Length: 385
Image (cartoon, rainbow, N blue to C red):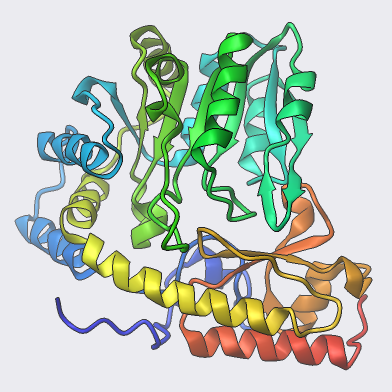
């Protein structure tokens, strides 16, 4: 593998980057939306270049090679024996959440989602003409996990679907097998379907932890689970729009596919190509990325916890830091930190205004500058409008 430089900031200005355009013509560091500032693995760029050199970009079927890669990957990583027929390719994970909400039950039903959570978990039920019941997560020691007692108490006769996120965004929790089994037991008891967002499964930062797909626990939970995964977060190829659902139950899968017809387009050929390049030969690159992210995480936790008014718990997975800013007593935290020159995601978007989410998937010099600005702002009591 050629040398990989995660320290150098690649200029993404004037590239129509969603992340960087938000603060165009300002000095604010964009550390909000969940894409990294790292160049994709060489295996991805090489695969794309080869396909571009072909020069013809017509309608495209899902490559059989990619299906086989996923089948083999699930077996290798999780000892999960899946079939090609179970795979449904999508141009994004968020549309998978929305399709799941439309697939299960009927308009007017209740859908359970955790809080705090990635915003589409709340918007998808509403867009699907369902009601969302948000169940607060609980903090056990330093980990945010589902409050399963509260979840079970929230189930109504009109509840048929739970939206689940593992690893958790924004809290960074990696669920343990016993925790997953308890959730599976509730789903079986109440005959519920679970849509499990596992997009950050390849970004486990704790070396002693492993990702466990919910559907691997037993055949019953597999039959009532829609698993969503993608290469986009891990290999920084979100702009190429390629995700997939694994749906073992035939009837559930048919409903899911029927709902998407005429509404959700197929993945484009460059998305497929990038996914093949990423999964086929990108894991060694990801191991280097994980080491870099671990160092960033450790640095960030140490520094943030030395700043008066801020608290950051250990992060088990993802490159997202869920920072408790409640003790800083800020009227408008997002605006305060933007004034300081750091653009983070407001916690209120995830359901808790006491927090801010910071993306540390960036070169260390950028992260160090962000920490410096945050520290100076709080120590100097920068006024908040």
